[in-house]
Image (tube, rainbow, N blue to C red; front, side, top):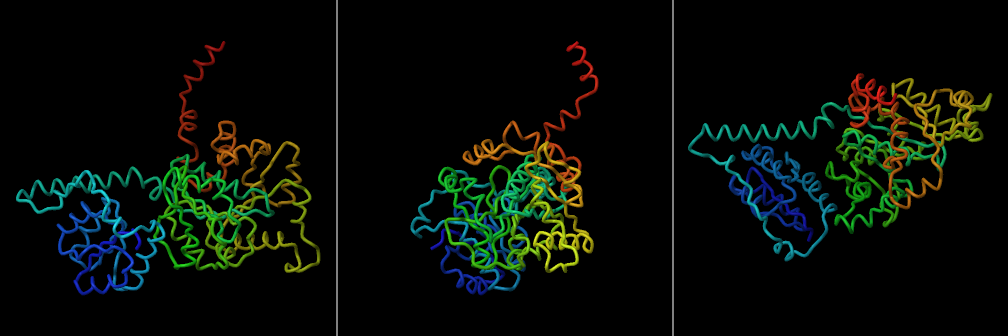
Length: 437
């Protein structure tokens, strides 16, 4: 039996009994008769998921109560099967344990205070308390969610590489860290059909032991069950990571519909999808049309770059695959208004920029400085991001700035400490110069 605890609030007892029959493998709370039963359930039973009938007279109060005490809510409209399937999808996010062990869990030391939900004789005082609770919730939303949802437009960023080893994973993951450093919720998504890399880079297996959590391969859950609960991606270093788990066999097939479900399951305004070199796969070609921006990583290698020179007098089908891909996203940019730009990785002073731009036929959005291989591998062995190193953080911020300006509103273009430096009063600058003299 799964350790997920389910509480079901239906309009009628008959509906409750019908719904519970589909959840035999779960521990389900007894039928709820009133608000006091919900209070007792939250206080002593610690539910993980609540199914709430939108037609129930308890709907509004129950949803607010569960929200306040961090219980996931599945809204029931009229479709028993779809609601049951959504509840079952939660099992992937909880370890299984024996039924008798579930009842041996310790009760919470503190019992939540539900006084503001109870009907009291002093109605005016009760109204004041309820207003305070609602005000508190609004303040929390402003503090936590305004940055992520109100002020930051949602962006789906597709990051590709023209050739293996060009650096789409490096750019995507470090860009995600740069965005997270600005206080923005961001996700990194690994293409489900690519070979797992970031899972081992982040040393997730060891983190599972030290942080005592169970990583769930969301793409695999979608492949097996159809969907997952929204907002269940694993968060680490300010980024939500949707990675392929190398401890299990690779997913055999993937399509555009599953890809959309994967994107929909992520609950952050900025989503970066690392498609690597799988740009011509059908599920990826469909995703390109859903993107807000497309970035293509290239190396300043003249031999590789020359692959973008089209053959004369030859149809598009007979052109090199790199040429076909660039023409494809150029057409998307022209007809659908989805911009695409190049990112030059491993850039250095020996690169002839003028010739590079002529080959690309477009000025790159960003150029990432070449990082010596020993320094790069040192970070890999330590499971550290180059962005988090003192030596390269400011450099990467500077390189990423044109991209960040395309993605985020102006007040988030710089990290807080960088912004403070830029806002230093002019008289302080003169005072420092006088002291130096």
